[in-house]
Image 1 (cartoon, rainbow, N blue to C red):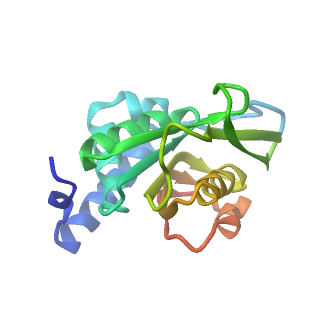
Image 2: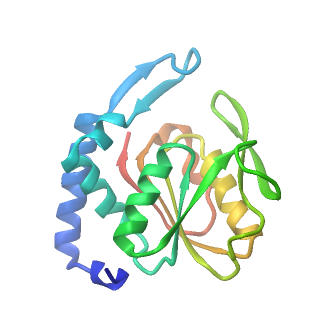
Length: 190
């Protein structure tokens, strides 16, 4: 399928986005004090397990950057999103892994999140990223460190992050402010 078949009239796209947001809101499970006390965890597993919900999310995310020639999904739920969007757009997909999960050589970025710190990695060779137009995907935008670190990885490899998108954005944590100059789309804002 050509990635250029994704263009739709604005009103149709807006209606789809609203329906997608409603399904995601309805199916998201919330867990207080997980993974640590004080953190409220948004579990999108039920959204992805629902055929209608998953399909709607994939279509909505794919519309964020129909000209991307590579999709990057952030460990781990971003892998599901990235694979689905890449298949729909007719592009390749790169898994942005947690530190220590890829064989060397790797490009690595450390970042902080609301309950600690971590590192993300992508392969340093084997994939020519120079000049590639990347759509960056994750499930939730909280404090923004994960998405910002992933974007830095691709820029350091010579790629251009043309857009980033998430299913759910927790606005009170201010993660949007940590992002670069690429467009950032969130299906649901809480």
